[in-house]
Length: 577
Image (cartoon, rainbow, N blue to C red):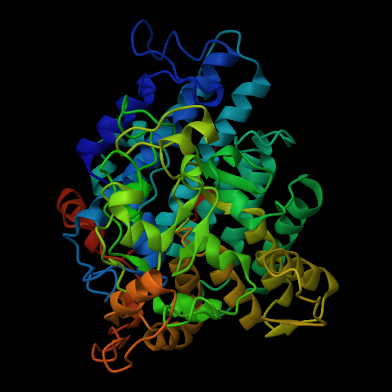
């Protein structure tokens, strides 16, 4: 929301953050030799002009994506992080970066949309419409993150006009119900403009926009304090169209969804599509650096070993870091694809070394890891992340044909998948009831759970609690869980608060002893007096205000109206496309 930032981003949008890539999808225009008046002249230029919206403006949201989506929600343990104990304040650097990034997306999308709308030349109407629809879909997603994170927020419909008339930094917050209506209106226009594609090339199409609209309606349904049956019906309607008509399908193997070779797979509807370059800095995925253990790749750029999947998420999967790996009973394939525990090996990481062995990497690093964790378990929960990791250089080359660089990978970050749509449909079909025996809702739920647990039998009914838990297991570490709590808080805040307070969000003491002993002699044993879960630290103080993040302090300095009460706007009368 900063004037200095929106000026930079509007200028960057005009210039397309000039760079080139060897991947056709990520081709971008060169910086020199054109301006708005002589660009967007043909189909290729229109495509190039919108491509960077799939990565660069989102870059500074990556840490907030994990810290808000996963640490806040109790899925991920991150030491003394304020996102773990609900003490985030307006000066938090990651909060500021997150806010700047999301508003940057809005600024970019608005600018490119207007450039396309006003472009002359030989570009076809079909391609111009497609690209404008992509702009509106990304703008909608940015607002969806903003309203669920900060609550009442301003609406920047056309940043060029508002910069020109001086109103940008005097905008008032708009009531979140109106913001949701604005998102709906924007997505409706995107759906009108976008083609119904069946190419699955990673570009946003009509069905991807419908999928996002279904998710928006599911969230919007509770914003008044009680669930709105019409909104739930709309969520079900749009989700059903995607499920039945988009041609998308679930991949057979859950873990395949998150591999480099499947960056644009048939299950994923909207993704950040990064590429491994430092020119420009911001086009790349850097999540492996924040989530992987030191030494996981060759660049010395991994420092995430001390974090890990929470004890509470382990509980949800029915496993524990205190389990004997020899006798651990589990049948959900998503667990191992989400978190590493003692005894786990991975054939898709370190393929040039015969696969990745979690404990060998920790305790035999001189021979195997060449500078890994150095013989001591770092994770205080006994688990480390799997999602968002690509592996080493060989793995990256094998998966994408390109070498990674320091803090640079091309691994896609999936924001909206078909499995989410199945669960949205199942929940929406319940309406305001606590369960359903609707055959379509049951089938949707079954599709998701049966892939993860092949022995799972189709049930005769599904409850809200079934879907609620399934969303957690299916989408863990995908930046989504906190926003489930936010939408629950809209209409049942006590339930959301009680569940968060009851979570096991703390660490284990002295896990290194049994982990190391098991690696060295194959026997699992531990002293329950020393190796135990931390019950000494009290549960965080979660209140209704916890579900709304504070505006970054510099945003409020640039626009003091952010600290005032929100206003109501009839968005369909006020704005148009």
